[in-house]
Image (cartoon, rainbow over all chains, first blue to last red; front, side, top):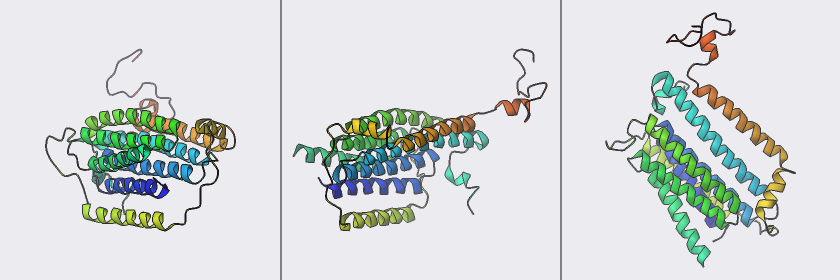
Length: 101
Length: 187
């Protein structure tokens, strides 16, 4: 149980989340992919804190930042889905590609 | 020995249920699979000695997934998975890209010359975190506070159906509120 193992698990979580975020058509499912990616980031930050620099609390602060990002992403994501659904009864990414070139 | 077992079980569960999130037909099951995956991440944090942050993740994710389940039922076209259907686009390209990203990261993880462990953890990491957030990392804490506050404002703004500007005009000086259904005091 060393740093590399923890980081590999984190990388696997990040990869699976990236797959979900790229493939899912539903905006809510896309957000689940982002959550998984952030879960990987949290795990990596905690592992680096524990195995490299446990003396300072900066690694823990990084975890706190990642958790906050998770909460913000979730709240804003649902608000955007709500606004999108109100405007055109759509919950799919393919029907909300207004900004794609 | 026990730590090793716990690590392998939690890791396998975290990654396995993470994969299942995108394989289940039922959205409710996908939500619970994601919950399980993130609970395992919380467990791994506790294993790393971060008791407080691990418990915060466990509590936060439980509530978050409960809320997510409600939104699923509200917005998804097939929340119960009764009609099997694929809701993916560009599956092959994404799978190749994600495998590439994972392999690249794994290569970096294995090959990087990680420095040795510097110092030892304080007896109470939670206390160290609190003192850090209220001391040297105060700016981080304040930035997070502002970010969360602006999130509250932005979410209310985005989710509001019709605000006072819709009802009373841009300068809020309309004599009569422009409501789809008349009613209420003085209307």
